[in-house]
Image 1 (cartoon, rainbow, N blue to C red):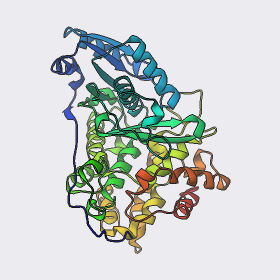
Image 2 (image 1 turned 180 degrees about the horizontal axis):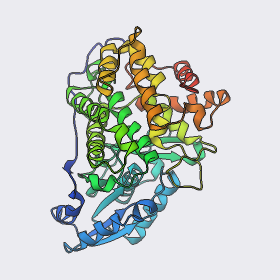
Image 3 (image 1 turned 45 degrees about the vertical axis):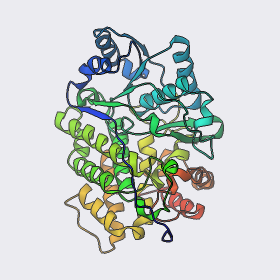
Image 4 (image 1 turned 120 degrees about the vertical axis):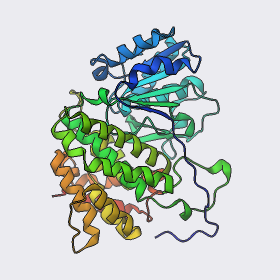
Length: 428
């Protein structure tokens, strides 16, 4: 466990975008943008979402309120430094833009965050990437209004201050984190999520679940040394407000996740999943995430030949939510001793009918493993192509995610991460 701080923190922070939720909410974005006095709007999306027609409809609707709107559909699913720079170059060449609207999953929203950052602030992409991978620079100038319109139920990117990317040369997934990246408005329209394939629903749903679980079991904000005002960061540790959102997200998942994967036409299940994603984002975007997300970055970044169903063909990938889930059972087995009551409560929220085993540390891992099997996730890290020989490199990559690992409820060494990854090669 962590040593009790000599001067414990007594302050937590909380931030969130304005939120508009409900079927048809995306039809009001033109009106919403009009409140910001903008004239030119860039809609950012990926080819798959563009093919649904939703981004074009949103752009047309924006133009109906007297603004100019253009669609950029070059977002890469699971963004890389190269794909982000391509989007930035497009925005610079076609700009200036007064506002951005991201329509899609976390990939589109995160790309729009990076575009917004780099067209408003000096410097290069890697200057802003979290240390030690990048320079960890904070933006020095205000960003433009960003409206986030999720079409998947998982990332919570519409609520958060984080942009996630793969740095190709380093074979590592990392991020940029600053309060100014947070969208000014999240427009969550469950109607836009109906086209998700079951495999995408499963992977992104596990992202919701891990966001809620990791923030709920994170270090309490009072376990840190007291910070000066300028030292405060969005991830401040578990706190009463974030806990509330995380608990509600888990309750919604318990009654909707399996149904949404099994029957994508179930409107009620889709709506509950959209709400769960938003709630989990409002939780973890302030409390933080820890070991499963830290492990997910190298799992996704070092993929060789895994091609998931339901995602764009042509190149290997481990979808983010899937990568997060693959070590979650073992990660929460490891963290149990730090916050037993939180782990037990989470298991009960996720599966109210589950029977508590003789060993309480096995309760949450068992609930997670059954859920992963039911929604069709691969059987551990080995299920996406990794072997025992890959574990040291994966552990090295995870240890670079110190911003996340310091949020874990107990200290995490490279030996600990190596054990979690090794035990996660096969889960059942």
